[in-house]
Image 1: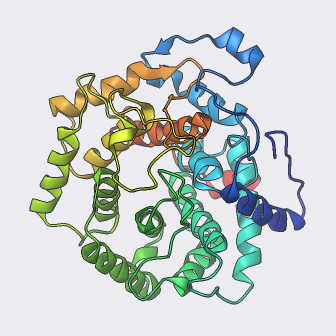
Image 2: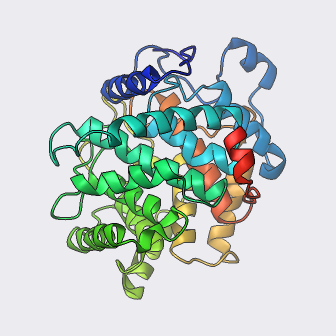
Length: 376
């Protein structure tokens, strides 16, 4: 599976998308260990290694980073570290970018396929569940940032996912030992909260969504976070749907984040979790002393959603770290809790774009007319 994969405009693309996603969750061939500085030999020679300090001026470069990497090896698949990272961030730069709209078409075809079938069993086929959740969530978030209108297929996809919500409120997320997004249930439940909250036209107030969201709240209350990463996801979910944290709990999570801030004002991904699978399969120790892209962007995003004011000196210093740490490729290097650093750096770049958008450094794009959206 390589970045050269191109999917044609036919209904069979939906089936291929599902197959690619299943393969993507299972493993990642080729490429080996790569630092974020590498796109290919040509671009390495041309772009160099210098960090960029003005993110606003370099947002175009961040978009190029996503597009050149073609969903980071697996263009057309739908996993957290590939199309998931791409669609969570790339539309914040340009919601009608060609790559965004190509992915949107594939997602809609996939959604049309799975919503035409009976709901899945609640516990079997975790990969298929994850594919459907990711599709529904990113369709909803793209609706919000593009037209601001809930598209018909997005509504169908969102409605569909509540059918396999477990009785405890969770969605039995993929247990693939791939940090940070396939470790435990917190990631999947947080994604659903974000998607339901972002969906335009008051979707969260529909009876189906209200019932599902209330179950989400119950799950978070019954499953207190065990580490910094789960604290951040809980804070983000509370920002999205509310009713999860008390003021005192929120302040405790904020304090826990700042307690782990590095002297360089960023955070290290190696310190985010105590989960036994938060480790590299090649046996290399995690770096717990160096600030990196994913952890710092995740912390900035979570702290902002927790209500830390923009003039907080500690948060400002972390934002400054992000502004000065973007590589000339447009990406953010992260030493991975997986084996392939290239995957972590791609996901880190997606989180950095979301974080800098949340704090207002990267302004949200203007809404587009439905006619523009349909034409794209």
